[in-house]
Image 1 (tube, rainbow, N blue to C red):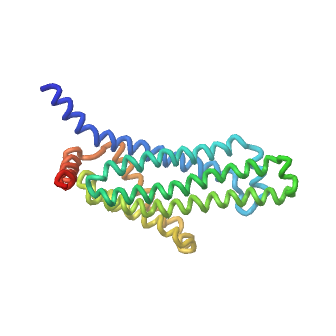
Image 2 (cartoon, rainbow, N blue to C red):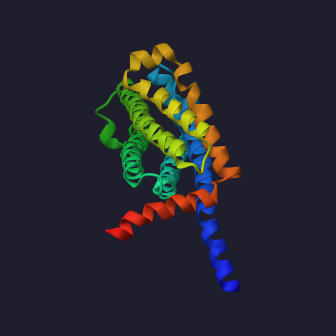
Length: 248
């Protein structure tokens, strides 16, 4: 009898544990993204001034490398989050959950590529013998170009992330084991990110286009971390999802 009760409790705790883990990875993803892309790079890059940017990097190489490390950690944590979200929302709609995971992983591949671009300025400004063909101002301009490419890669990732947020928002709305208002907020967050598809529009709407992202992502993040999911309703969804598979 006690064994059966323990198994039941473990089965009930499983989706709740996954939800809490998803919330934790969401926090880690957001914190490392802000550290790498906003805080560290914001300290180094002087808009339109390649020489000043290069001097900042050379003066604080270790701190600049921290930005690269933070970016990679953000990508890794986001991959874990994608897997957990797929598992959590699979009972709602397996196909849409799989599509959402695929879209996000493609975007993360672009983000990872952008992160490795941060290594290029360190190499270019390192002054190796093979770089003697470049003048100082040329090396600085080349290093600055790679930083710009990094920004473009992460902006491209945010477009993929926008589609991901819309899909996750729909899945949350249909889930019944998470509040519907969280799903609406996440979908609005995704629409804000999708304005980056047309940079002139995004620039005109900035920063208001990304304001819903803070509200939507924060609401889902905190709800998963501190509340979790309604285990009974998740199990009901999971049981219904298993019926067509067993019938086949």
